[in-house]
Image 1: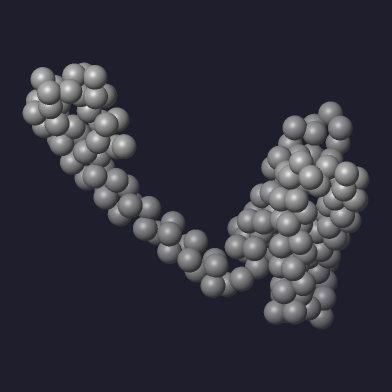
Image 2: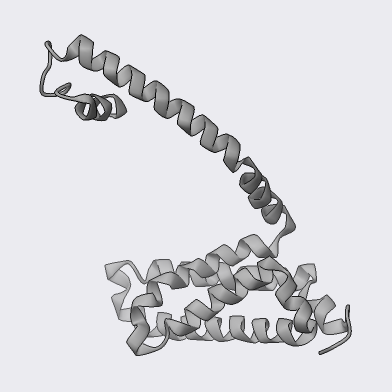
Length: 174
């Protein structure tokens, strides 16, 4: 374990290192997206090679972070998020676990941990969840009340759209 604030740790936490990793993540997202187009099927071997190279870069970056920070690495929840994201990507490379390949796109979520502004937004959203749930409950109650009103008003006029509470809710939702 290296001492706190060593040169490697400072470099890995620098703006330039974060920008490089962000570029790799965005490149990886483009490659994963390009794989979905039928016209790109001839390039699949190239895409898989690029994906493997990018995953290797992410694993090296993770290993350097653990080496530079030691046990301090595990105290930051964003580092743990990055580690889990990368480990799931590594697991998906084994043929027996190829179903996990779909999860590789989660690497894009690492962008959240790279930039303090994005972390601030996520933290604010997390703090807002109780209020959002209250608003969602209020909206559901209003939707429920108006669905009952719609059923009572329009059941006789259009029974196929307002045949029940569920039918009324579905119609109002549309």
